[in-house]
Image (cartoon, rainbow, N blue to C red; front, side, top):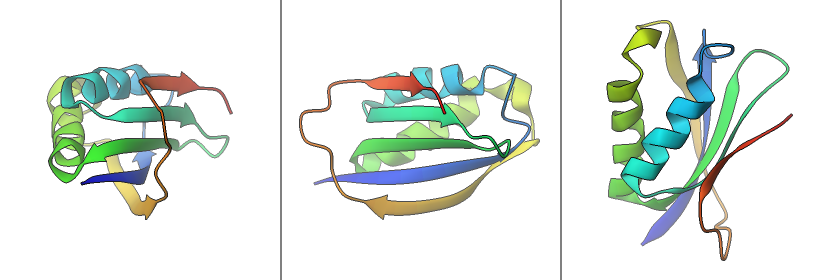
Length: 94
C-alpha cells in the first residue's frame, strides 16, 4: 500500500547539493514526489511509495550523502494525502 510522507530536513542542507541527493535517493528507492529549499534554511520533501520504499529513500539518502556528515537530520515526518498520477521525483523552487 502506498503512502505519502512529508519530510523536513534540518541542519546544513542548503547550498550543498542536498536536493539533488534527495532526487538520486528517490529514484533509487522508487518513490515519486518533490523536494525544495525553504526560506528558513530547511529542506522539505514529499515522497510517495510503499512503506519499504519510504524507508529505502531515507536510508539511501544517508548512504549517498556522506559529505553531509552529521550536520543534517530528519526533523519531522508526517503522512499526507496521495497524489494521483505522479510519475517522478523533482526539484521545486520556493
